[in-house]
Length: 303
Image (cartoon, rainbow, N blue to C red; front, side):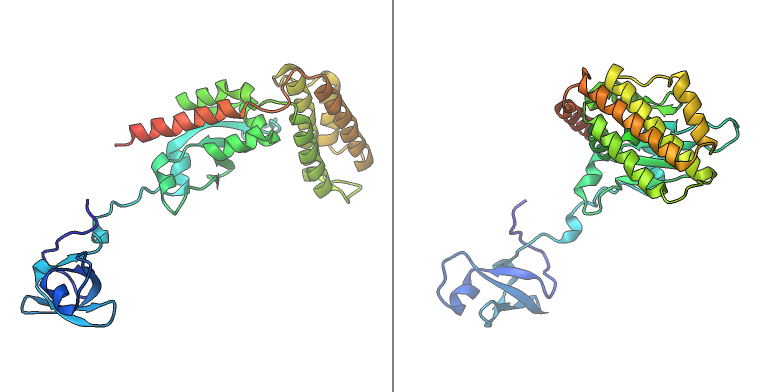
């Protein structure tokens, strides 16, 4: 649509271009019209204040509006409420962390959802992360991929969790993509994550039940990291690790011994990285190509 359009009626205040006899009367121009603003309408004639301050009387056929009315613009696509995104557009969800002995105990659930592609064109972007409902924490698929490419331990734990709650067809594609997220950077990423967690827990020589459980979960991540570096998969911890992790979770060890166990696992993690068959960095190109194709498919499927 042309930027200049001939209006049937121009509201007062509209920016216009004046041309024809009115322009000639106002003074010689270039033939392209003079810009101004409608300040009055009476008896089918418009009074226009030109940019130089002069007033001219203009017939309807001697002016054009400079912009289409904003009401002609389509409404932007919204991603919807955060809870609705999780409920309707989750790709993959699974329980993570320690599996409680009580089957009725609340699970820790992590998930990945996909916001509508068109929603990213709006100034109001979809959320990157959504807390809830209940124990759920979900990432938008692009944010999840960024974190997983950085070897975020929680995101990789989700990808390898055997306790799956929901897997869509696209969720299966994401699971098939798991090898692309693996690299030797697991060693540094896991070590930094666990050290940060231990720093928050430090300062109590007699940790309570909640602190002991948190420490055990962090130490288990170091065990899982070793397995990923050695095999590209997460298997069940050895009997020795299971027993030691159980002792930490039960609060049977003083903090000094718990931290010594962390340092021991850290050294084993470094050793696993030194001989790992994994590449130095993740396959970012493969993940990016999949994500781009996912966005295009969603756009094509939008009515």
